Image 1 (cartoon, helix red, strand yellow):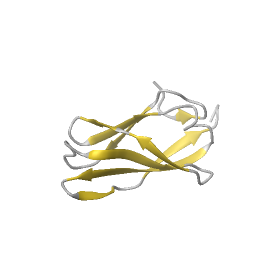
Image 2 (cartoon, rainbow, N blue to C red):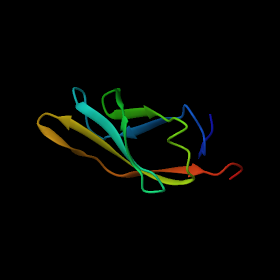
Image 3 (cartoon, rainbow, N blue to C red):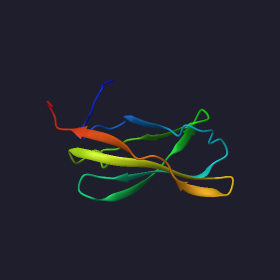
Image 4 (cartoon, rainbow, N blue to C red):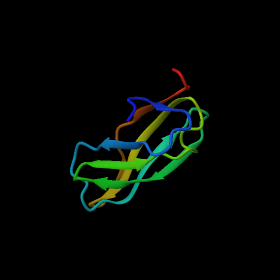
Amino acid sequence: MADKVYQGDVGTIVRIDCNDTITGATGIYIMAKKPDGTLKAWTATIHGTEYLTYTLTAQDTDIVGIIYVQPKLTLSGWTGRGKTCVLPIHAHYD
């Protein structure tokens, strides 16, 4: 749809490439730090063999600014986080 995520958008799919096979992982989340410092754990799903996906809600996009996101999961005895990514939330008409 749009090439930007705007404040209040609902239904946009966030997809993070984990750059490794994550098939069989458990405890799958996308950890998010919103522009106001609020921390969230978005329950994610595995797409294909290397991607995590999550569908944004109105509560996720209620603040304009940068959301920092990190994949978090457990796989083969390892539990941890992946590389931090940025998700800009734009003001309307930006």
